[in-house]
Image (cartoon, rainbow, N blue to C red; front, side, top):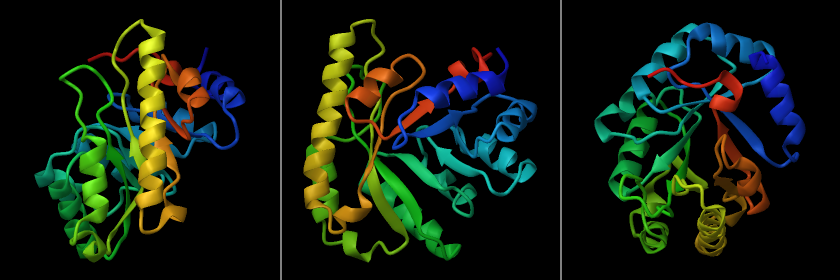
Length: 221
């Protein structure tokens, strides 16, 4: 099937309240344009440099989501245009995003990345660390970021009950952080679920899915 057919098929299966992020990392501009022409406006990249290069070449009504691990020294390269940063895993990174956003007179939406997977290779903070950020003395001073929800990645496994348990854990953490958030009305995004497990993620409460290979085909690294 073509990229357009893949997109249409996925969108037909998504409930109205779920946002689709088309994960376009490693894919050529022509593929992104095909998805754009099929109506897709939200694209996710996991390398800042690649995202910045694509932003230069593509229509300016695209919302760019940074879904990968973020190095603090590279935040400046995306601060002028990024729409949502999924992978905020500590307070130092949040402070840097705020600092760089201020230079561009912007407010950048961010998700707190929670570690729900059993694998050591996955990044993220604990529920306690996320709570500490919301209660820190410094938090009200961060005028150039909005914490709008959480993101999590399940363990890479065939064990569906383990994945379901991890997704449910993220939903529970989200609910408790929403109560603690100084502006709970802004806190409504749960970014979880990818090509292999997004229907399960939605059943467990996801409001945003990150889908790449099911749209663009298998990646060539």
